Image (tube, rainbow, N blue to C red; front, side):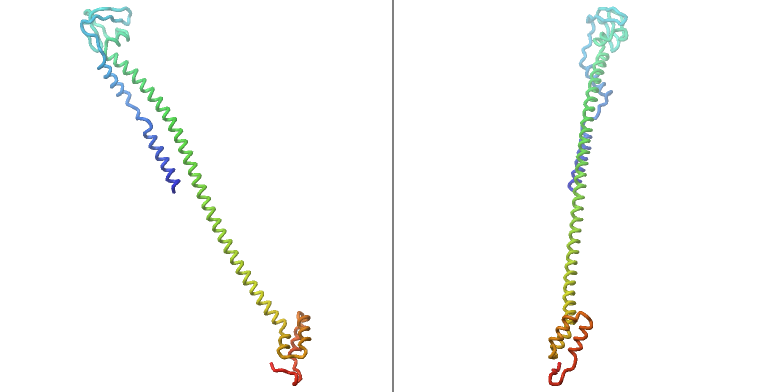
Length: 244
């Protein structure tokens, strides 16, 4: 029961760790917008009347005072230049949206790259931990199975030992009974065998010794036993006869 509980705890801990191993992947579009707003707040755009030098995509540069500026256009000495007419480096210095978008994009890509790298490392670590947890669970289940088999084998051995002892006890009882019966039967047979001698002795037969010899040495033959019995029962003369 304890091993099964430990196995369940390991599985539960593994699932909880997997759920809290790494933060949820951010919404990168939302993160991009957040970073862009931060950069817009920090951006210092050129001011009106400030002398600036711009570089055009078609080549060449132009210096002059800023008479007007918006999110995607700038007016220098009465000439309007759109962001599409200027080089990326120039736009990055002049227009806050362009600058903030570039910085936010670079930062977002870097954060996304770092997140993916950490997630990959975490996935590898979790895979290793899961592998170890599975191996540990397998080992504990194997140990529990072996322990269960050992208990069952012990119980089986106990039952077999109990059956063996019971059988031996019954065999001893049977052997004792058999010995008693054999002794009783032996006594009975021996008594029957020497019955002629006992009768002759009881009657005070004058030939009791001869009857005993005949009974003992030839009684194993049926004729010898019958002869000794008849001899022991033969009537004797009146003066030598004793009433039984």
